[in-house]
Image 1 (cartoon, rainbow, N blue to C red):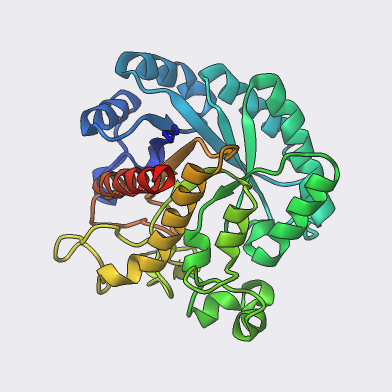
Image 2 (cartoon, rainbow, N blue to C red):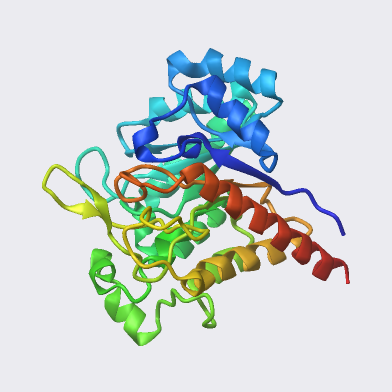
Length: 332
C-alpha cells in the first residue's frame, strides 16, 4: 500500500527568531523550497498579498495547498465566504475553520451554532473545491474537548461529512496542567477518567477522533504536558503566553527559557504516530496533508530566540520517517 500524504508549513513559521522579523513573501517561498522537505505552504493571505503569493507559488513550484482563519458565529459569515473564495482561487484543498467559543452577541456558541456554521462552510467550500475542517483549538468552542464528538454526531445526523483539523498541541499541553484544566472546568472529568488526554491511555480523545476517521487536516506544532508558559512575551495586562509550543529539536543553549527534555515530547509524537498509522491503513481516510505550525504568537513562540523555521524542518524530517514506517507496517 502506498498512499499520498503531503507535508507543508504555515507561512507565519517561515522565519527564524522573533528579533529577525518576518521575511518578505518571495524570501519565505525561497526558504521553503531550499529546505527541500516541504511540499506546500499554508496560508490565507491578506487581500494585498494574494498576487505576491500567486507569483511566488508559481516561481518556486510550491502550491498554497492549505488555508484557514477564525470566525465568530453571527459576524463572520461573509468573511468565511471571502476566505474560501481566496482559497479556491489559489488552489487550496483545505480551509481550517476556527469557530470562536462565543458568538458575536457574546453568548457561548452552541453545538447547533457550530454545526450550522460548519454546514454553511461546506456549502461554500464545495463551490470552490475546498474542504473546510473544524479545528481543535484554545479560545474556540472545541477547547472543551467533550463537545467535539457530539458536534460530529450532530453533523453526521444531518448527512454531513464531518471533517476536523487535529492540532493536538492544544490537548497535550493541558495534561498534568491544573491551571489549564480549569478552563471549561474539565479537571474533574480528567481526574475521574471520563475525559482522557493521555494518548498512551485507552480511550483518549485524540484516538477517538482519529479512529472515527474525522481528521481531514493536521497542524503539527509540538507541545508537552504542563508545557512551560511563554514568559518571553506578555499581553497588555502583563500575563505570559499560555505556553502551547515546545521546541521539537533541542534548542541551542540560551535560546529556550526552560529546561528541554526530549522524552517529554513522547505524548505529542504518539498522537502523530497514531494518525499516520490510521491514514496508512484506512482506504477512505480524508487526511491529505499535515502543516507544521511553529509560530511567533503570544501563546506560542513570541519572543523566541530559537529558529521557528529550523524547528519546522526537524519536525517534518521526523514525520517523513514515521510516515515511511506507517506505510511499511500497513503493507506487511
